[in-house]
Image (cartoon, rainbow, N blue to C red; front, side, top):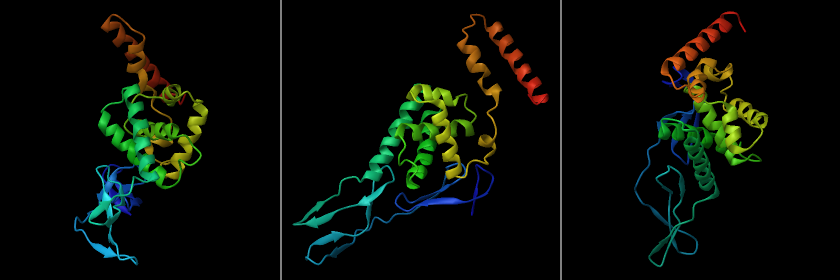
Length: 228
């Protein structure tokens, strides 16, 4: 176990040998970055041809074979299916972030994509739509960061049943051991959504907006005290 500064406790970590990093299984944050060597080493195969040892690490942090050296030319392998799946997941996450207006954009995309890579590494995407898994990863980050977005916002964007998306959400929490995370184990705080919905009502007067928001907050506080 290692200490996670975000969770503020010792947690289990998940390593990705191809990406060269380790992540916290509770929040998905990168805890350690691996070091890669840029020394090039060649070996000869049974046919007498030279081949490069090791892997090529691209800008996305994904490693793949660098190919073979033949007649003085280096032939690189195409990106494998795992890398394409990661790229597709990132594209889906970025599209949802833009559609919903999640901010800060880049931080939300990166944090969600780290969770998606963990889910992909554990085979969670098999039999599930990439867009659904990407949406659930982004929703987890929104819950952790107390952002005012509901699961139904994601289901509306994807055109899927909210209960089906909720089932994937719960399955992902169990897989990544996030079901006991303080921000995810209980219901979302209703007060997070008051400003958003009050703005959607379109009050022309700012004082009316404040009055409605303050009344709603007092109602939420009263219901919380009465265990409603």
